[in-house]
Length: 359
Image: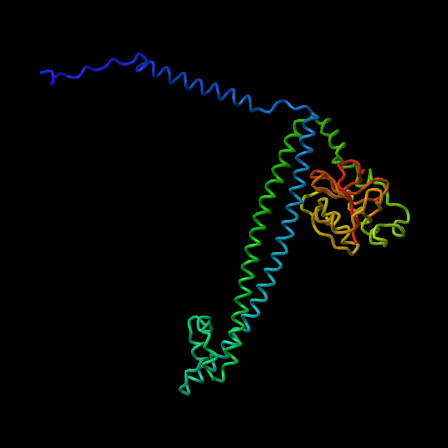
């Protein structure tokens, strides 16, 4: 009989009924409170104007460093594109010659067929994959056919076209890699510049004006309002950098660029970034400089600060991320940063990194 009794059910824990809902409610409330405290702890503290300015300076410096990396990748991408275009042109020309040679073999093969022979030219012309046929090592040694020279020529041309296509494929892969780098650098630069703009928006109009004036970013009242004139007899200075009038022409170009806007990645003529300005200035004097700050510093003769002469390139920051052109009296012409224009500034306005004299 006992085996048929219903098992006695254990009483529920006091928290198992209505209290469960209460516990869940408390848990949700606790989570919400924790989230609120977490949000409070992660909120940016109120920054002082000096802290905002320091942070903006850091963002601009990092953006310029990334922009120079972008310039280097862009130069490599352009070179890869030029090489790819040249390879494609050469491949097209050699393919045309190959097709002409194969058509000639086809005519010869047709003649062999009409005369009852099926020589190597005919077999090559009819092969679905000519390369497979030509890869038979004993082919030319077995045949005494008069078309052996023509077949050998086609084989050589097939090899050449194949090699060119392999090279073009490698260049295309390199170009795609450079394009991926460009996209990454571009996103980084734009992100840092946007962050700098948001920080500057926290300042009052007076504080922003003071920051712009201090950093050399404020636009002058007129294109030449704060610009000292070039030295008298500038084109005839005997002690310019490089020992010739080339430095004079480079500095004259830089003077002519004063007032033009800074645009990162730009090399003129309407806008410039820092290395784009120095490259364009020396190009006007017949001297080719590489594109980036970190390559320009090694493009000429490295000089010390006390050896500076007009036309020399002066570099700044530990990563060699900014460059200007020395014009004498402790002054340079440079393109400072986004939102600014090409202008004259003292070389003491930024951390010194070195100087070079283009050859």
